[in-house]
Image (tube, rainbow, N blue to C red; front, top):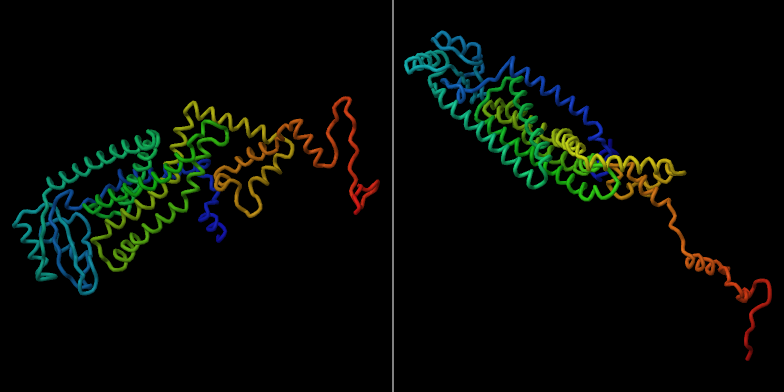
Length: 411
């Protein structure tokens, strides 16, 4: 485990995200299918801000149960939409019960029944259904405008296919977060809408970081035959993996504190709707940027004729390199040199076979010129091939060797 963490933080990871994309597609499809079935079967627990209704809130000791509150409200002639909600604990424990639309006399009757049975002070708030419908329409309109603006920005900053991949990942995160809300049964409130808009921004931020590295690695890729677009994208995901994990963990820790400590242990029910959508959205946003957005982008790009031709060139070159004598030994030496760092830095992590290209190129000797051969012969102590008719030179003798010593002038 320590070795994996060390390679991760040094950027030497070798995870094949793009090659395993069918596995990620299947996992995402199963999750989305479960969410859609929950939409149809369970639906959503909308708050009174969206459906309209009347809310009663009062302080109650720990001995008062939500079921007892429901019986008192129903005996007063009202019908509760969901189970009463307990907010806080100890001396600040309060119970919130919501009903449908009630007239003023009906509200007074329920309020009197609750005050007589549980508490002297009962607060009442009423929201009309038209207000909730107006809020819903505005939220949907803002979502559509946001998605269109994001498509335009990413299309101009990078390219249209990256915008398509980012929006598909964004819709995946939205459906998954809504599905968890439907499965858990948390109440949908305006805080939920705020949380959804927050996770949209985080998901796009993580995706744009990865796409920026993909664009950098694929620059000038068509001019050679070193690696395919998918291999360059997989390299980019490995290079940004540590950053994505760090960003996601730092963002999830305070949200997990709100959800599990604030809402779970302390019983602060007013923040659990916001905390749940943030927690699910941040986690799914980190997942989709690595395992969904980039593989979708590769599928779209590999269909282009120029990148299909590049894939064929890369396959042909590597087949030729693999058929050379000693190519496997040279590729291994080029992939992992002394010191343990892949040759060329991170490219060996994203594309190990690319080192075979370098090894194959290095194995091809450059043709030597006649002048270079003569110079090598002179340095070796011999002589180059003499010209026709030229007088052969006598080799010089050194002191201490065999033969006649060199003459030296005496004083």
